[in-house]
Image 1 (tube, one colour):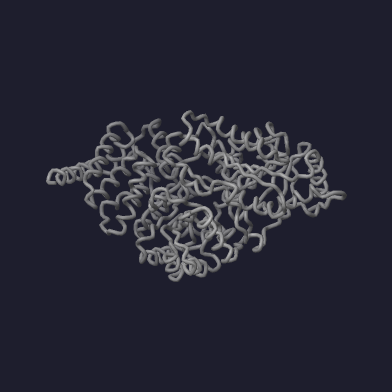
Image 2 (cartoon, helix red, strand yellow):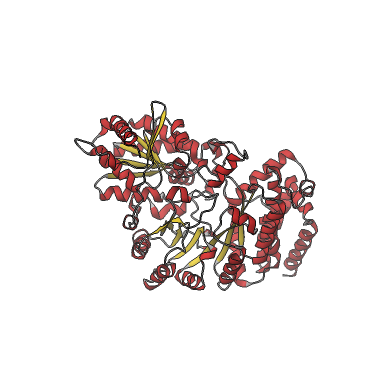
Length: 605
């Protein structure tokens, strides 16, 4: 780092923060998850939105408290979701602004820090930063994954932000505060991972202060938030249907980073190459603290690479301490890293659900996206996990990569059907800034280089995607069969055609096989999962309703099956989109036959 750049930013920081030095009190802010225009009140009321504790802020807060700073956290996303369920008159903007104002009034901070993780949060993030600056009139520092991914453009759009902390910030943020509070000659050597706009120029200190294993072995400041109540206002992880109602859920991060180098993923850019693990004692100590101090009953691992290091040792220590907690890995594990010993220990330590990051069943695509695994390794992982049918197995699949043909996508679909995991989340590629894939697509002219918050919309899982596609196809009104049958195996589908392929894959890999499942353990998993989709996630999804009816009929819950059938009939009567899909897949006759079977059983009983 050129000395003049470091000196310049140091002098600029002194000027901007001079009125509040010494800094003793800091307010950390977690913004709402999406802008008001994209917020669906009914979805929030059904707990369809995520309510993850702001783990990064909790880690930063604990480091700051250890250095004798006064720290508070206001989680505006939690407050919004809680207000939906508790306030008789709900005003989205008024709720978060009032909460922010109260936090400022009660803490009287010398500095405010605001984080942003996701691109789709960008516009509300801008609003929160501007409101914090206006109301508190103190310096505002921004950071998080989204800020790191597109730092210059974020800073130029949010000109009231004084400085951006990029990458993992618990150490660099603390060093920034120590630099500002030091009397006499300032030591600019303390500064790292900082950026600002000064006199119209983007200035950045790229040197990094990555946390050491000792820095990572810290229990976050869970006492600063209502940790025990997060699961009561929203979803935490992808396996909540497996848990008893009102289960208290929280999150834990065992490892930072990921050994993979997937071209579509920003983890490596944010955390740096490789993986840094915490001590097993600190990880299990954190889980114990959540159980004993907050009543947590289920853990979702936040890890991008949970099976790195000594996962058997971690799970065995959980068993040895008899923690009696269940857990899931919703962010996805690396299938190629799985061994029989890992799966056995995971099962015994409380695992109820695993997500695998498969992405594709085509080897050419896997090589191009630099996935750390092969199709054969995926098959072996599926065979290993099949011995533990009580673990709900899911996998991420992705389509729409540059130059990916219809034939490649169909290979992925057929592979998913072959290995037979319990469920697949299928998404259409949305490249993120800072990723190698984003840069290569820019070079090929396949996308426009811009802040993509307006393009990347928040969706409530694959069923949010389903709603978006249905709305688009109502506008286009082009029959599925006409659109899809025009494609040849070597064609690269258009964006519009990807929606049809997505529907086909979702139907064939997930829904079509439901009618053939009779294993009692799998039915015990799938029944609450499909009921949850049909009752909470999307009541207007004809395939989900029908599949829920099938599973209920299989376990002889005939009355519930009848109610689901009536819902399917209502949907078909109101939706040309669903009538088109039932016709395209020759489902009408199958549905009538199934309805007849249910009616027969009800009449006989």
